[in-house]
Length: 391
Image (cartoon, rainbow, N blue to C red):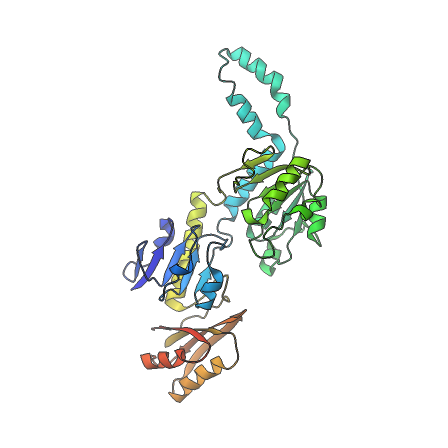
């Protein structure tokens, strides 16, 4: 019986993928093989001895102790693209809000409740609507920083709104490149993106290289009066520097999905309560994707959409399977194969990949591996953990 611990509410559409006869899924399991989590922060205390996988129902993994997981051979999965449409639609709302002063207009009308006469109301509205005028997005230039699943969707949406779109992503993958329209002008550097954009929207993960990326120095590179949208992560923006840019008019508006105490009620700031992926469809998509990945990993050892291990998938055939996690150093795989040869165990199929300091191996063999074989492999210097799969 495989044991899976849930943290946060995981949509039933995902949990239903685990066969009830073979999987126990509950929030109270103390030493699970896998953890399913959304936004709650995990600590190293959650990395119990039996744990082999953490599934994040979302894209960002800054709530997971990634280095500690890798050291323990725990594979961390995420769900890139599953919530892309939900975030894209919220960014679309933010673009419209930035251009048309919709929030100000709504607040104004809400405060007219003391007018009792309909004709008087219409007269007042017509007389004051000029105070809430805006501009059209058509023809404006949108700079998209980060062209992954969400950033590329936002870029395509902006093109459909007849905006000019600039894009920059130093870590652009081949798959992401195929998704991006040729009408998106690729910038050679981030400074050019900032300098030429009327509106800049952020779609990069929180890494050492992106934390505080929008700071006092980079804000000077923006157009005067530019609009900044942040539906990526709060840590990407230096809030103190941004406050100064708002006060000085360098940034005219900051619309973010991450409320911050230093900016609440500040002129030009509109914040939503982390609504990016808060749709029924996004939650179901994320849950379904992460549960499928965890299921395949626990039953077959296959890895897809891991943030700390290489993607690796080997079709199951006859025989038995060994999954081996080890430090990415020479001779370990050779030592494993020598042990198998000494026991006259034939290897049917094998796949090996590495990522950074860790390597992952799937080895299909003809004979059922006895417990002493697993113990012997586990004693090889540099081996982190070993799992066995039946036929």
